[in-house]
Image (cartoon, one colour):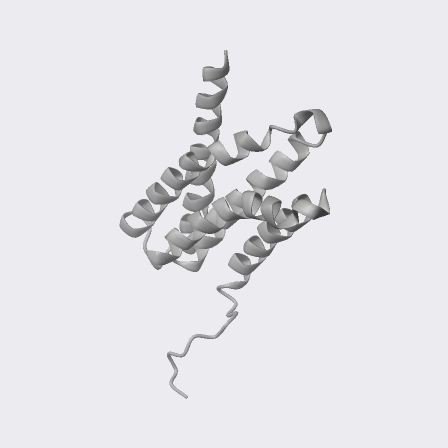
Length: 149
């Protein structure tokens, strides 16, 4: 067996797997009410995350950068779930979906900076992923809230 074969979960990939599982489990739990719309709700909650992470994987990022981006996206879903928990907030999911252009731009900037500014520095790569995606989400939410007034 060649030494360059890909192991499924090396120690470098464990944080990425944990962040990915956090986002998936949140989407599953959040999609469970009501159960007859589970797949539609699951797609609405996790598909935007999956698309951003899938596009990021097409660029072959470091595991640390992927972990940072997945962590920021999962934290966004967690905070959204805490914010929108009452039945009168039933249209709040639109804010969740409309936040993702900012996350996509943030992930693209993080990928660009990780390649140019911090190659071979996993902590910096992870922080770039969390920071830029969070900043993109925050600026996008701020833009949406300012257009509401």
